[in-house]
Length: 150
Ligand code: FES
Image (tube, rainbow, N blue to C red; front, side, top):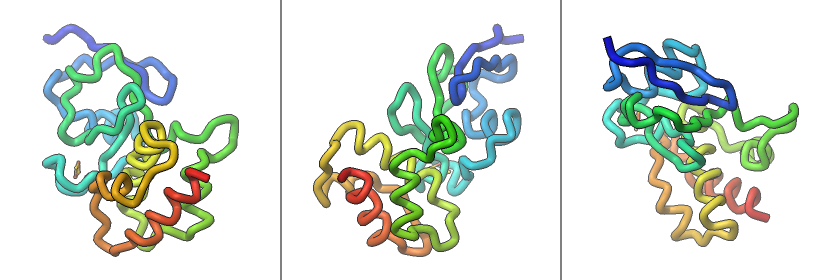
């Protein structure tokens, strides 16, 4: 059997002793029951499964467990600190972004990564995120990201 692999998820230590090629998304949803991270396309194209790995946005469906060994993963469940919503989550509520809401955890984590890299993002910077929203809430997503940047 493969050697167990250690990782941190939302500041807690975990081990994975199964297939190192298993997608991180399965580990989060099925093993840890962190179901905020969504399965959309399964091929790294839609962004519904976006999480942070060492602070950088990554698509969990296309990330094998071997890649996250000894790394820190943050999911939407880990964004809240000391019972306070993350500023991006707060902006999401204030702009009433969600329609069906399926893509929003991924959108929020992608936005957190963008704002880390570009604290005052331009419209073009926001366009680089590329996470899909089938309800077409893009105008509200943009407004929420700009609000969080204020
Ligand atoms: Fe991972 Fe679509 S489910 S990118």
